[in-house]
Amino acid sequence: MEDIKKANATQEAAEGKAENKANVTDSDTPQGAYTHKFQKPYTYEDKTYTELVFDFEKLIGDDLVAIENEMTAVGEFALTPEISTAYLYRLAAKAAGVGSDVIANLPIRDFGKIKNVARDFLVSLGL
Image 1 (tube, rainbow, N blue to C red):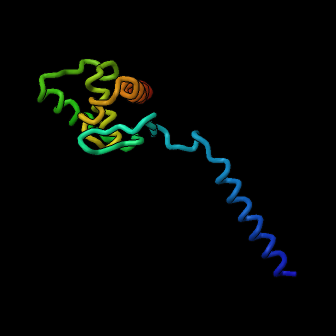
Image 2 (cartoon, rainbow, N blue to C red):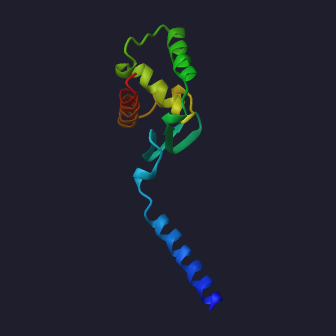
Image 3 (cartoon, rainbow, N blue to C red):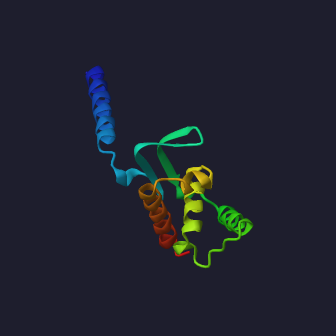
């Protein structure tokens, strides 16, 4: 009898795990994470990308300072980062762990969508 109860409990647990896997949705992704899938592969400097994952939540204050320093080095300034295209694409690059030139050279449709995700993230923080 005990063996039957254990077998049933094991089966129920397995079914519960299967149900959990089947019920994973976009709402289960971490807040701030965004996966951008390219309609056709994007190649930049001999590296091909099919998607980029932007994990804005991993960023720290020093990343924001680094973006400002990068902009200053090329004579650019962002008085309001949430509307500065130059700041936003650099923020997105930090979140994706790629160089800002990778984002800057994207086709305009992809660039615009990614820039808007970065803007929405900043606005949601109230920065």
